[in-house]
Picture (cartoon, rainbow, N blue to C red):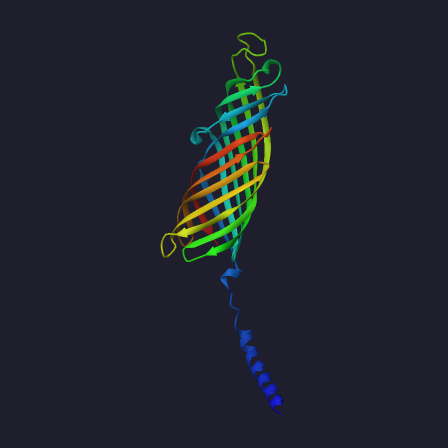
Amino acid sequence: MRRRILRIALSSVALISLPAWADTPPIVDASTRWQFALTPYVWLPSVDGSMRFSLPDNGEADASTGPYNYFQNIRFFAMLQGEARKGDWSIFADAIYLNFGNHSATVQTKGSGALERQLESSGETSFEGVLIQLGGGHTVVQLSRVTLDAIVGIRYLGVRSSLDVSRNTTAGGAGPGFTPEFHASQSADIYDGFIGVRGRVSLTGDGRWYVPFYLDVGTGTSDFTWQAASGIAYAMKWGDVTLSYRYLAFYGSGDQLVQSLRFKGPVLSATFRF
């Protein structure tokens, strides 16, 4: 009898509760929604490094160049970042295109025939590059004023560079006044995986002023690559404005076109969130 009364009571409670569940919309947690951010920015890097060009006579030429003068040598640039976040998980992307004109370089050649001796000379190089980064992250530290994400991703650098050299020297028995001239143009595709951290440290209680930071290291086509950035930012209702400094480096070896390549300079960005 008691069991029968209990069953009837539970059934009544369930029937009375059904309309309430049907009429009440489910509570949506902000952490379950996708949030997006788009960041156009201007990076004014100086670019320097060393390129190794292959020569027609099976020789090679190492050209040390830079830093390029951004305002004198730049021909065109385009830069954009994007991010999507859901709770503690995020994915992000970064795309850059840079095209620099001719810049003076110190060239060291080594080859056969007219270039059988190792010679130093001067020349001009040009540089064109496309950088694309794709990555994902997970929040590992979430405090009142500190946020830290662990990140992993892949970085692609497509490089096209040319070298023009003319010199007056004695080489390979050609006699004084022999003036070898040559032009070399090569391209390379560099794929590197990376791991790192990124986050922010709030400077004020309301979080409007904060210090963003980013650091990664990686390898792949390059023997080693790393990147770091930090600065100061201010958050508003529509998004954030950030002034920072960014450093990015690649180091290769052997016969790779890119022996070393470094980008460093200030960044001004505006992040729109939706």
